[in-house]
Length: 469
Image (cartoon, rainbow, N blue to C red; front, side, top):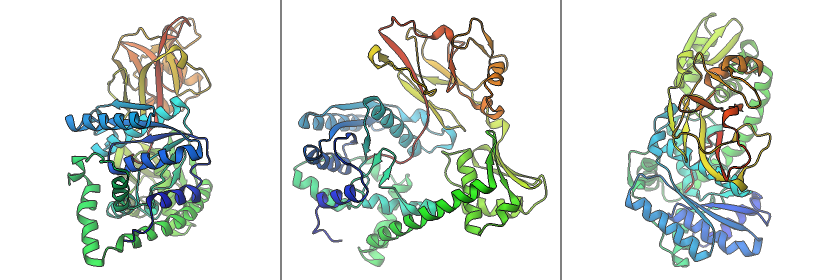
């Protein structure tokens, strides 16, 4: 592995080539305390004056490693003090999210991190969120996706830029990170869970990568990295073609995704499978992508079958042939969600839909009203913890601005909410009373009077993807 280049030069090159920063941005730096994120912090701090960057640190303690993780938080806070930078350090018990909607423990942890990270960035008006993924992470992700059976677009790797997310160290190797931390005179924290082979990434990092290097030489990682870059370009082109094809043969009714079979069969095989993946991703965006076996079975058993042919897919999804169309929908039995406890502050993930609902108290100056139906403020003096569930027969509430209560079913009909969406719409309750029909309307009884010193802020959003380091 070549090491004559510096981390600074490689990171600056990535920033310039991918237009990550132009100068003057407010940037949230995700810092776990490990080598990658600490190197990222030191690098950006060294760049801050030159590019007029306003840096804010963010750290999340998953409460999984006891004293070790508490020490990580203290270390990050000490770094913030050393650089005189503001820091938000929070603790969330991610075990409450494990198993929700088929999420593995590591997926649940990643989801919580990214949700809280994005919320913090929105709260302070940050334009960028900097993550410490490295070239080694890129190689490991590629190998993981091969093992998991991802298609071409899934093998394109971790993007340098994704919305507000930037990854300045994505061309930097882990050995260069360690060398840089040594030059800076800093000793990052070590996460003992990185040695736990129960996690796929650790098995790839500790087993598969060393095996490849021992069999094919240390340059094999460079080869894989170049392959990821090549596949990324190919994947971008293919994804564009898939989007065009899907717009011609696919449609969403709000309750299901339908694909015209005749049009689908007229496409090249790569676009056929791309449209099947697109239908799946549109219906259940947070679920892991369909495997090759699932795609083959859909093509052979459903597309090639008679009307009524069907197949059960993960997450309670079913795909069926209805005359000339292929229909993806979520089974009715999987739409009902029992009561989930929503602590204040805290968050819950609603199974199947993937919606994340959060609640926290905020001071008067943070109350803002706009057209965002995913953000609401209600009076703070209500019974907690809150409960979250899907609608039940007989549910009633008093929509904001109304004088009397009405059936939730009637409200949905008047608001033209699709039938399937009604069944999965999260309802936030205090005791037995509906506080918020999430994403739609709060109850008049819980509206702010305008004299409160604080409010209870409620948020609904879809969770994001990659984890921060």
